[in-house]
Length: 341
Ligand SMILES: *Cc1c(COP(=O)(O)O)cnc(C)c1O
Image (cartoon, rainbow, N blue to C red; front, side, top):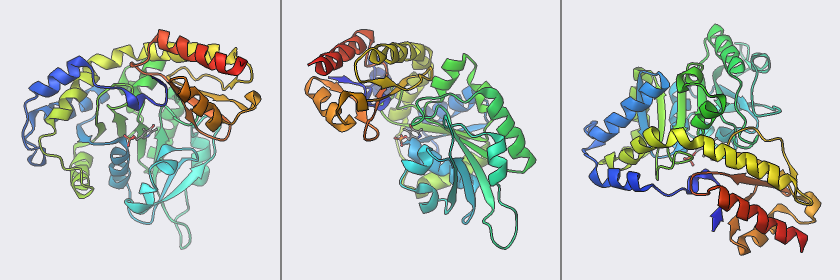
């Protein structure tokens, strides 16, 4: 199987399995797991924040991040294709008690100009704005990377209005790799950042939330309330540390493979590749093949290639460390056979 569905499908590396087997552990609800403590401190250090919080999933990290910043009855400004809005079971409403104020965008990126227009006036009718949420890289927009200047402008504007910024950085390090900047260069423009250890970085489980000590203290209580108070979680955190230390540096390979896919898929009949954003995600339209994305996905599956249908004619391929260049070439060849027959 050549699995290009998502970068979540990666299996832990031998180094991760060794680290897991040897992890020093304790009860993390009492904050006595040394490996979790090390991971949280290291994540905060890399991102230039005071503190970190290890969470089981990105969804929980976003939920805690958004709940820490807001009060019930507020609005959260996000883009209309945001993961926090469309793929997290309305957690914003369920847990944070907030309403999304969604802004349509070209590439998944908000601008301060667009945000400023949606900040509600204080008065007897409109719900107050409590938070601005940005997604970097942006999944459904095609792995697009926020230009730094645009983020800086959002942060400056948000500060001027006393509003916090949360970044859904499930693929944060893909953005840092694409821009070739240190993580702090991006993280400085958000009050809290969530990033996944379990996606391109290859850990089996886990995400991180980083921010101030005060935010993480509050977040720790929310994590417990959400059922995320894990005990000897150092077994998982050990893999997360390997992900942070050993896997960040190789994301460029995934980007190069995605660039290859974007170019090679565009040569196939009936396939229209969306502009490639420079990270590990490629979207393409299959209407010209006479098949729907679901039909094509089924036929591909029969040949041992897994890609995901993200719309009636829209398909997604995501590269990661369990598919190398040869596997990408084979996937393209198999798709080519299918289309030529
Ligand atoms: C995957 C993803 C998440 C959440 O991840 P889970 O760990 O699956 O809960 C959040 N935001 C974006 C943009 C994602 O792609």
